[in-house]
Image (cartoon, rainbow, N blue to C red; front, top):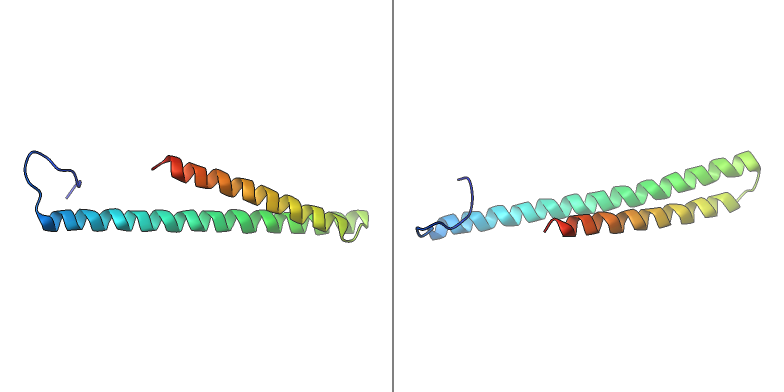
Length: 93
């Protein structure tokens, strides 16, 4: 079956049920991909901020300052990228 559209003839209830299942499966995979993209962006940006802050602290001998700044920058960048990803996924609907 290539699509789930109604044509000039009546579609059987079993075919409609199959179409509904295909659409719900597609929505489930789309939701899982959105969740995994958000998770990867948030954790990646926070970890990069933390490790960059620790590296700068060791280099400049400013023990917790760069770590805290890197953490805050990582959280900020992660939230902005998450919002951009969610708006991109919502615009496709």
